[in-house]
Length: 293
Ligand SMILES: NC(=O)c1ccc[n+]([C@@H]2O[C@H](COP(=O)([O-])OP(=O)(O)OC[C@H]3O[C@@H](n4cnc5c(N)ncnc54)[C@H](OP(=O)(O)O)[C@@H]3O)[C@@H](O)[C@H]2O)c1
Image (cartoon, rainbow, N blue to C red; front, side, top):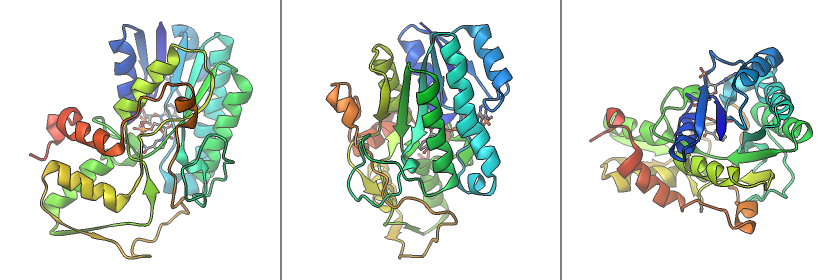
């Protein structure tokens, strides 16, 4: 099959492109210079040239603080951009994978969110991504809307200063004697390689719809940092930060753990426990260039 990956040089896009290519699919990776998702014409032109059977849209404006101060930009990329990609893919008869986020929830539930739970975003980023989901559902019936969370992978996250959380912790452990990390925000850290594998599995089906797609289990950022240091054999004094020690500039869900209910119902869930995923990242996926050893 011919696959167009939008955001192809992003943290997730790189692994998605590699996962489809490994299955023998023809992958065309589109970077920001090739396509501007907020422009209907740019999206139509670039996809018309390729005529893909599957489009994977990983592009987003997802720096949470910047989205809050630039809501028009956030909605242009995350909502209208999603609509443009959905319309263009539909007119080509292509299936669309649209990547969304755990930040569509407010975090008050305190138990894992399923696809059935009502979304209630707390900030501009979450609202713009939720609007994007609705546009995709309305514009292309052959869609997979895939909500992911706490991504990290061997390619840098372009929107977040090029360091994922694992690399940031390892860097800080080399620079400081003691680290303090928030212990009251719960997520499921998820390796991008596993999300990519999940998209390939879904792409061989016509089980269109909304999916939660994260690793199994959950942890606070402090617990994640603790596991990073344990599994990498890093010696550093790590303490849980006190409440209010790192006040968030923008409201964020304190608990955004997702349950892969739809994937499990269909027998298609590929995800490992987050700790196993972390182990594999540290042992197998990290780029030598960013190795701390
Ligand atoms: N990272 C996380 O922890 C996380 C958590 C939940 C959900 N997500 C979602 O996962 C997806 C992938 O995230 P990621 O971590 O791979 O992000 P990333 O590394 O920042 O990659 C995003 C890609 O999209 C491109 N892009 C940004 N704005 C664009 C636009 N207007 N038109 C065309 N291309 C554009 C970027 O190019 P430039 O950098 O050149 O602009 C980059 O190639 C996003 O949809 C995000 O909302 C991420």
